[in-house]
Amino acid sequence: MHPPLANLSQLSDRKRNGPPLSVLTAYDYPAARLLDEAGVDLLLVGDSLGMMVLGLPDTTGVTMEMMIHHTAAVRRAVKRAPVISDLPYHAYETPEQALANARRLVEAGADAVKLEGGVDFVPQVRAIVGAGIPFVGHIGMLPQSVKEEGGYKKKGRTPEQAEKLLQDALALDEAGAAAIVLESMVPDVASDITRRIRATTIGIGAGSGTDAQVLVLHDLIGAFPWFRPPFATARADVAAEISRAAREYITACQAR
Image (cartoon, rainbow, N blue to C red):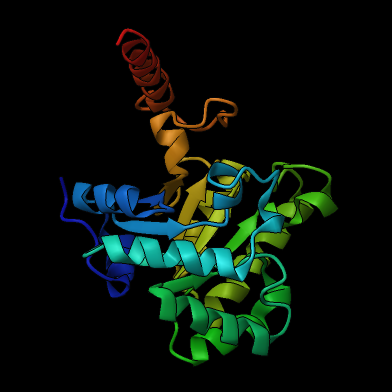
């Protein structure tokens, strides 16, 4: 196993020399500690916690207070892996708001912050990066825009879409992004973006041609059986084990 990433300054070296990076979400202390001790390169406190932890229908109901709460829990656990935290829906509508909320996440323990969008959000990105806060972009399918777009849709299927994604990536790269998440896009488009920008690309549902891959922890360990995305390979069945242990406990209680 290659030594895990120690800090965000090593991203450019890993992009050039490999191997590809591993990224997983974490929302609480025990999960973050286990993943950090296992050697994952980067941890993402994603606003996907809205669905995975809080039972919300999508990410749009996640608030800054929720993100701060979960970022702090993850920070208490982590000794090595850099922690990225999401700026939630409506938390970065202006550069001033984006920077103020980015600082709140950093104060809670984030090493970098992430927001969704490309060209239209360059002023926000420049404000964050200009204040010395490492920034991670997110283009392609944008979960915070699911209501406006009418669902989760693959991006980059047409030449026009592919060009728009490339321009978004180039704009974020030029604005100083350390990394960019490429979500649910045509693999050839993700590979082309990866070759043409300095920033590290983190793919999810975007093929294998990116510099890193990210998965929601619950999808990796089979802890959310009610929905499993087609691109995610579950490497454990935690949901079944929880159900089994609970049934054994119920039986033991009833047998007393």
